[in-house]
Length: 306
Image 1 (cartoon, one colour):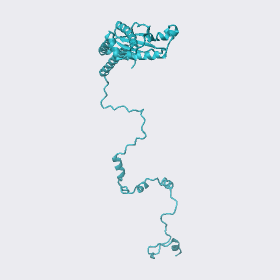
Image 2 (cartoon, rainbow, N blue to C red; image 1 turned 60 degrees about the horizontal axis):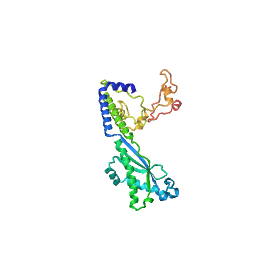
Image 3 (tube, rainbow, N blue to C red; image 1 turned 180 degrees about the vertical axis):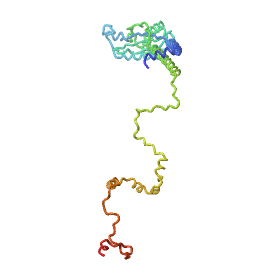
Image 4 (spheres, rainbow, N blue to C red; image 1 turned 135 degrees about the vertical axis):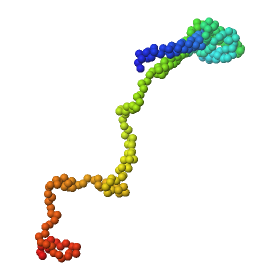
């Protein structure tokens, strides 16, 4: 079936295709309502060394970096992702989902603070709240350990909370799946109705199906046995035959053997051709004696000498 035939079938069964397209459109609308567009805002913060640790660098915290700062950033990110921190943020009016983690491929104590939600303005406000809450949690950790304020690790914002960006990848995936499913079901319904309504050519009564000449005979298939009547005819002797059913097979096959060559040569002679050899009856030169022979015949030469 080519493309032109498909379009002809769709045009002929438009009353099936049209409701299917309407249902597909309704399915797409439902997916668009149930899967809203999500927005995401992100900010980047960095942990800096204390004022006492930067005295040797003339108070420049970016010249004094230690591995302990990266460990502190990891611990702070885990605390911000905890349930207690999420409840605290919710109580302050933040919405959406929150995520704090170390920045990918970072060479220092950099953190990403991300907020995802369906309301663009609420996402931006929640990201600002998360950034401020992270700085508060860092000070609270050190205050609990009675750290001198001049020796406390500081936090500064490298990238402020960005304008929320629409995340349409997931929504587009659901829309494509819904549209494809509706279109496929509509086409299946169209061709199913076409197959049911298309007339089939009836087979003539009494006509046998054409043999398949392309099929090769199976060599391993045994030949059918001979009918029972043929076997019975072979076993039954013909009238006038001297061979009975009880006669051995070897004796019955002797009669079917071909006679020798010399016998066939004799039989092919014409009846008018005289046969050479001794005559069947020898004429007597004189009358035979009346002497009894007791069943024995005297030689011819002896009768001549007498």
